Length: 127
Image (cartoon, rainbow, N blue to C red):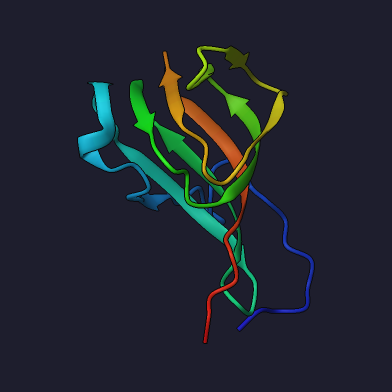
């Protein structure tokens, strides 16, 4: 159930700095390094199609195919280079924000510990 209150996003996760293991990255999609992810979900809407949280990952490269949702990210720390299937690369660091569209194909390369706030929007689920 969604609460109707304002939610503060904390860069270290839940109050007290708690972040839990997450499994967004399929280990089979990692081409370099080892993806160890943690994070915290601050908000999910009533239809579970919008999620807001903080996410952190160790240095690695993930090969992304058919990205499952639209996502907006705000970089808190680290560096991320995103390369699309045409070979165009954008690099993001602390203070940068970007959007990845659903269906994206390419790679995410994190050269150091990386952390961001994120908002994901999934397609409406059919009932």
